Image 1 (cartoon, helix red, strand yellow):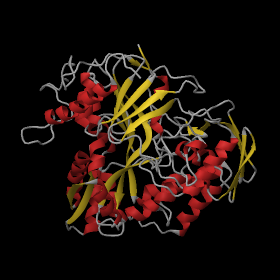
Image 2: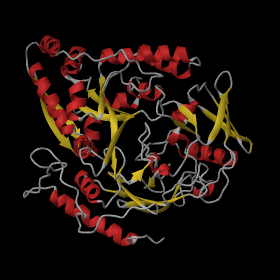
Image 3: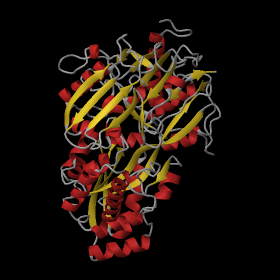
Image 4: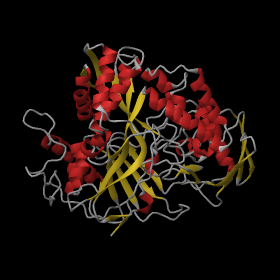
Length: 549
C-alpha cells in the first residue's frame, strides 16, 4: 500500500531513530533519567516543535493512515489465545461491557437462560462475515467455544483463558440453527453474559486455528480492523475492514507502534511523528498534566475498571495484626494521592469494587483518613517499638504509574507509626517472585475488573483457594467467607446476589488485608486533527470512529 507522504519503511525507520534521540535527550550527562516532560522554570511546556526529534518533518495526517504509540506490544504471537489485546479493535465478542460494566450484546443479538441458569440460548446477529470471507454463524461460535475448552488453561500477556472462569462447569455447546447457539452447563451460571464478555468470547474464523487450538497465522475475526503485519517489539499494522458490520472505518490504516520509554512517546507525540498515544500507562499522570497545557494537543482521561491496591502480607509481622493494617490504611490520604500525585487522573479508592460500577459497588465504605488514630493503633500494636519492613516495587508498574513516588509518600506517613520501610525497585519478574514467596511486608499493584462480575474479584482475593489470596499472602481461610462467595456466584436473584456482595465488601473493608487506594483513569492524547477519539471503561480506544479533519 502506498502512503501519501512517507513510505512505511522510511517512516518506521525515522521514528526508530527518534526513540534513541528522545532517550538521550531525556537523560542528563550521567545518563540518569530526566523529567518525564521538560518545561521552563515556570512549569510551562515547551513550544511545539516544527520538526520531529529525528530531524524528520511532522506527519501530514490524512484518512489514509494514522500512527499511534503504546508502551507495550499489543500483539503476542500465535500461541496467545487472542493474538492481540482487546484495545486493538481486531476482534469482537459475543458480549461486551458498557461503561457501567453492564454486559451488552455485541456479536450476540440477545440471550436468555433456563430458570436454573444452566442452559443458555444465544441468538446471533445475522449477516456478519470474518475478515477472511467466512461466515460468522452458530457453527463458528461452537468451534470457537470448543477451541477455548480444548486449550484451557492458556496463558496470555493480556488475559489468560480459563474455561472455568468463562463458562463454569461446561458440558456442551450446540448449533441449534444458523443463528442460534445453545450452551449447557453443569451448574447455575447467572452471570454468564459477564463471564463470557470480551476476551472470554472473542470470536475468530475457524480457518485461523488448527486442531490443537493455536493460530496458523494472525487470525481473522469480525472487528473493524484486520491485521496485515506484526513485527514483535516494533509495530502492528491494521487495515480497515470494508465488510465490517457496523460500517467500514474512515481511517484506512492504523500503525500501532511499541514505544516502551515514556519520554520517547511524549517526544514523538509533541514532534508530530505520531498522531496519538494509547493504552494503560501510555501517558503517566505527570505527563498528562503537563501536556494538557499544550494547546497543540488534546489530552483527555476516562475512569476505567482498574484499581491500584495496597497488599499486606498477613502471614508475618507486623501485618498479621489487623490493628497495624488499619493504622497504615488510616495514615494514607487517598484524596491527596488522587489530586496531587496522580494530578487528578484517578479517583480516591473506597470499596475494592470501583465506585462507577453502581450495579454492585457500595458507596458508603469510605476509608477514614485519621493520622492520630493511626498512631494510637500502631503504638498499641507495636508496644512502642520500631520495626523494619520491606516494600518491593515493580519496575514495569513504575514505568506506567508514579509508584516510586507513591511508596515514598507511604514511607513518610508510616514512619511516625514506628515502621521503617525499605523501598525495593526491582524488575517485574523478580517482584512477582518476591511477593509470591512472601518475602515482603507491603506492596502496591493494579488489578483490572475485566468482566464486571464481582465474583471475578472476590473469588480471587478472599476465597481460601483464590490465586491472589495465595500469591499476596492475604491469609484468608474463612469457611464463612468461602460460603458467601460460593452462594453469590450461583444466586439467581439479583437482590440476593447484591446482598451477599455487600457483605463481602464490608468484610474486606474491615479486614484491610488489601485496600483500594485509587480507581484509575486512563490518560490519552492526540493531535487535534484526529477526531472521534474516546475510550471505554476497559480502555479500548474508538479506533473505528476515528477520522481526520
